[in-house]
Image 1 (spheres, helix red, strand yellow):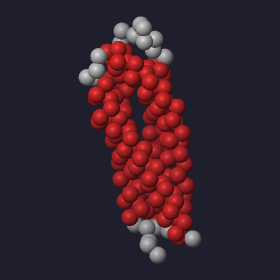
Image 2 (cartoon, one colour; image 1 turned 180 degrees about the horizontal axis):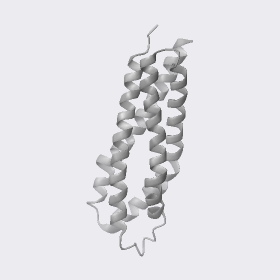
Image 3 (cartoon, one colour; image 1 turned 90 degrees about the vertical axis):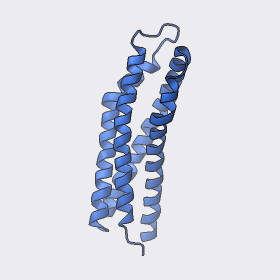
Image 4 (cartoon, helix red, strand yellow; image 1 turned 30 degrees about the horizontal axis):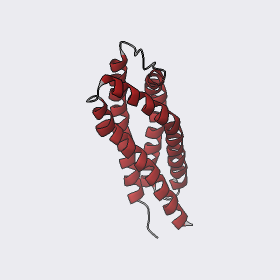
Length: 158
């Protein structure tokens, strides 16, 4: 039965690490490149990304939290340290869902609704606001992933 825990922990780490890594790549590579493009290309690409990621990421964030919460619940009788670290990671994941809904989704929704023929005068300010808030989210996701990895390192290997 313990090997199933390790498999589940590995799946959770994979989903969490891929999510944190993809969000980091967006913050460090994809979005900075957009600012070097002509405004029309930047806006068109930002809108396309907002539409695509706005569809996929809610599922990914929800799956990530569900896996972390289930793993936390499972670890309560296995290891106090692992339970605590993974528990904090799952709390951070939930906080990032709430943060995203409150602070990033409204900006994302505005970007998705842009008329590319007549961009709002403050469209770049919206982009900068989203990027700044996203970098904060990425920092918390990385901390949460680190806590998860730390918690998994404390699991017995029998």
